Length: 249
Ligand SMILES: Nc1ncnc2c1ncn2[C@@H]1O[C@H](COP(=O)(O)OP(=O)(O)O)[C@@H](O)[C@H]1O
Ligand SMILES: [Mg+2]
Image (cartoon, rainbow, N blue to C red; front, side, top):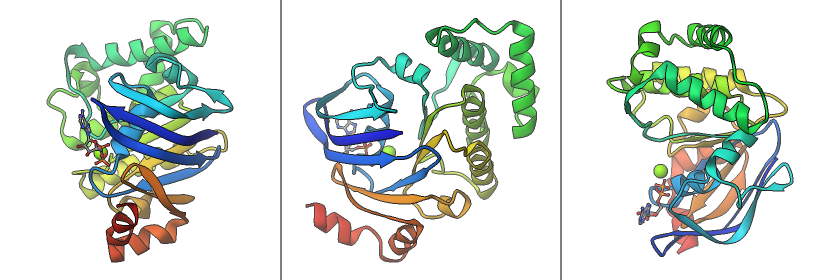
């Protein structure tokens, strides 16, 4: 479903991704683990199409279609979803307004009709109830004054409503207590499906006790240096990244 081949990317002339290859099949949950500064966030931004990154080589294919030439909003419409390590606060835009704009932008790109307000509200309410997102949160400006756990619930809500093909979670577990971790994990596990792929980026094995991955890949110095199954994550937890950092240097 997502095929990344020999990807090279830099920001401000600094090479970050240096020949990264990764394939994630439909239905698969792939975990990316790696030391700080190895390029995990950069990978997620480059796949999502965030401005400021220059891709100098390689390809990113989504279901056989090259997405590198597409703008971020086109990629989102094709089904790429990125949950940020640090969710943005948007003062002045209520959460409901944001959700409606995001859903309708995606529908427009896909050539679908805009949602009617009652239909939109029905969908949001149903998903919010399941995730424990309160009506009060939906009325407040997006993420402003939300606790860490509330921001995570909000991201999972967005993921549920946007029904992505490929969902990338960038260290969405950082700073989370166990309850918030469970919310994220339950959200992901509920959305696991044969026609959807997940890329779960995490520094720690702990999240993978809740979201059990099909594959684990170690990112070091801008490349995937080792791939394995979930046992690889346990091995990392025991031995740290030492061996792989040395390999890449
Ligand atoms: N805007 C930027 N300008 C210059 N260097 C950056 C920028 N963003 C990230 N980097 C550098 O790129 C490398 C990879 O960063 P990042 O992708 O955030 O790593 P990770 O998410 O694995 O911790 C780091 O060395 C970081 O300092
Ligand atoms: Mg990061």
